Amino acid sequence: MKYIDLHTHSTCSDGTDSPASLVRLAAKAGLAAVALTDHDTISGLHEAEQAGREHGIEVVRGCELSVGTEQGEVHILGLFLPQDPTSLEELENALQYLRDHRSRRNAQIVQKLQEMGLEIDYEAVLNRLGDRAGGESVGRPHIAKLLQEKGYVSSIREAFSVYLGNKGKAFVPKKVLKVSEAMGLLQRSKATICLAHPGLMACSHKWLDSFVAKLKEQGLHAIEAYHSEHAPAAENMCKTLAKKYELAITGGSDYHGNSKPQIVLGFGKGNLRIPEGILDTLRNA
Ligand code: AMP
Ligand code: ZN
Ligand code: FE
Ligand code: FE
Image (tube, rainbow, N blue to C red; front, side, top):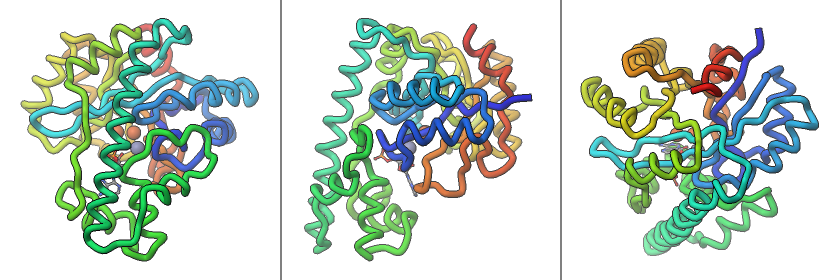
């Protein structure tokens, strides 16, 4: 039996492997397919697909969007994004808009850190990215890394708890799409739309159930049941919801390279195995 991984991040957003190395790693791990799902960008897809052809592994074209709900930020994955530029134009424009907001927000966060006396500048955050492929969807993890390198914190976790997290001293909220905006965009770009890692939400089961019902009405195709951070109970809860609302199931490690070293591509925290059959069901969803 072969396995797949349909949720990964590269240096185009907050992962640490270039799209090509990520795909090479996936092939080396024996996976049959890997989806690149960077936050707010699809700039790594071309490179990933090229590497896929080189290494004989299917690359699924994806991206991950954040949406706002009354229960906080929720993530939506768009998979099987089309190739033709016309179908992608509206999505590309929206992603550009979100990245412009990210840049302004990053500058505000850095300014708050400076006002607290920390010697850190936005140029340095961007320079750290060097000439990595894309490197265009920049966010808090990049700032966290610099804070750690400069010795202001001893870990990424501390960077978030003291400065960058929603209770941190330099917190600035991120611009997110409305649920209906994201669903409309992905639907019009003919993506397969998946609710990402529902098990990570701090909400009641009742709320999640009604949220999935609403998403289904707006074109949701699948629920991410398999995820590195899903306990068996969360995985089962997702499968039950998928059955109830006639949705497909998807799964991925949410690999980020060294920035989340405990998560291994295709294997999560060790026992994640997403069977290849999931991909065919999803393709037809
Ligand atoms: P941003 O998109 O800039 O808001 O950054 C969000 C990313 O930061 C998420 O995808 C996580 O990978 C990471 N993140 C959020 N909270 C934490 C935390 N407490 N510790 C480490 N990483 C975090
Ligand atoms: Zn991420
Ligand atoms: Fe996510
Ligand atoms: Fe993710």
